[in-house]
Structures are given as C-alpha cells and as structure tokens.
Image (tube, rainbow, N blue to C red; front, top):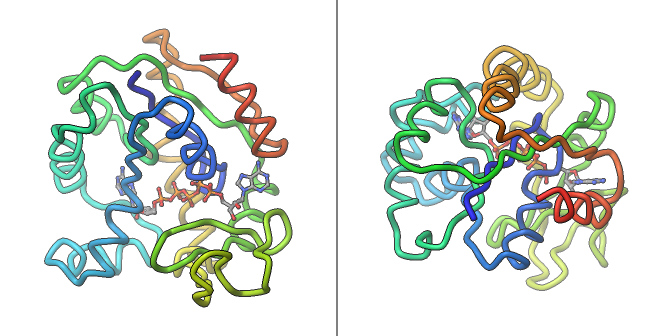
Length: 207
Ligand code: AP5
C-alpha cells in the first residue's frame, strides 16, 4: 500500500503514521524527519536546509524530490510506504506521480485552533523523535523521554512566529493538493479532531 498523509502542520500526521506503520507493516517516510536528521548530523544537506526549517519555509522542490526519490527506491519500500509531509506542492505531487501509483491520500481535517494548541505543546525526544504533548500526551516524568530519560526538546519551528508562517505556507502551497488529489479520486477526508486512537480507527475503516 502506498499512502500519502496530507494535512496542516500539527494535524497529527506523524502521530498517526507511527500507528499506521505498525498496522500495515510498511515504512513511515517523513520528509521533516529526514531533514531534521540531516541537520542533527550536520550533513551538507542539513546545513543547506537548517534556516529554512527553523523559519517554517519550504525546502526547494528539487532538493526534496531527489531525497524522496532515493528513499523510496530503498528495499524496504518494495511493498509500499507512508509518506508524511510529502508532497507539499503541486510540483512535488507531479514528480511523485512519475515515480509510483498511489493507493490513497489521507487528508487530516482539523481547525487552526487545534493545530496551534497541538504545535505549541508538542515536545520531542531528540534521539528517537518520539512525540509528546504537554497536555494531550504528557511523558511519565515532566520533560523527560519515557524510555531514554533524555530531556525533551521543543522544535524551533514550533515557536509562535514560525507556526503562523507554516500555516500561511500550508494554505498557499499545500492546500491546493486537496483539489488535485480529489480530481484524481484518491482523496480520503478524515476528521482529525478526536483522540489519535479514534482518528486511526476512522482511517483504517476508510482505507
Ligand atoms: P514536518 O516535520 O513535516 O512538519 P509539518 O508538516 O508541519 O507537520 P508536523 O510534524 O508539525 O505535524 P504533524 O501533522 O506530524 O503532527 P504531530 O503528529 O507531530 O516538516 C517540517 C519542515 O520540514 C517544514 O516546515 C519544511 O521546512 C520542511 N519540509 C518537510 N517536508 C517538506 C516538503 N515536502 N517540501 C519542502 N519542505 C519540506 O502532532 C503534533 C502534536 O499534537 C504532538 O504533540 C502530538 O502529540 C499532538 N497530537 C497529535 N494528534 C493528536 C490528537 N488527535 N489529539 C491531541 N493531540 C494530538
């Protein structure tokens, strides 16, 4: 199964992708995670994209498309994959269409108020990427990862100025993909306002 997860920043794509990856036994490919790993490892790509991510802008299409093309050519993607955060522009969607036929594009529908609450309270384990929320999914010990005990961090792009820029970029560049995939008959709308378990049940049924 080849699935794309679409939706605004903070809609819960990463949270749901972790559940879907186990259930469907296919890899979860998050372009945001790939870029963040490059930044952490101080690769050439990481140096190039660091400031773009911190400000909440989009990495140029050519760079992103090449990165995804290489990733989905890997062995573990033979039976499918879950793309989280890609495509984000019409040019990326067209490039993806040249690479494979998708089974579905899941659009997580959630309002801006929920998105802002989710992003501003998100915390992350720096080594495993495990996600928490200070209110909706708190760690067992405040500020510490449940397994590794490491200090949790807040993403640079979860600061208020970057959040509002990300929402503008989403509306301008990514939202047009909803109509693009609707016309292709691939779009599956999912109400993402409930608990992650309920959102996942709806997603499974709809797929
Ligand atoms: P990326 O990492 O993809 O960020 P994003 O799309 O903005 O999505 P997020 O990770 O912020 O949110 P999410 O929907 O995954 O929500 P999450 O599950 O974490 O991209 C980062 C940057 O990389 C971009 O800004 C750009 O610079 C660059 N980039 C990436 N892809 C690119 C591309 N294709 N082209 C160009 N540039 C690209 O949940 C958020 C919080 O809410 C968590 O704390 C979670 O615990 C909580 N939560 C989740 N679901 C629920 C729920 N149902 N109820 C209550 N709380 C919930």
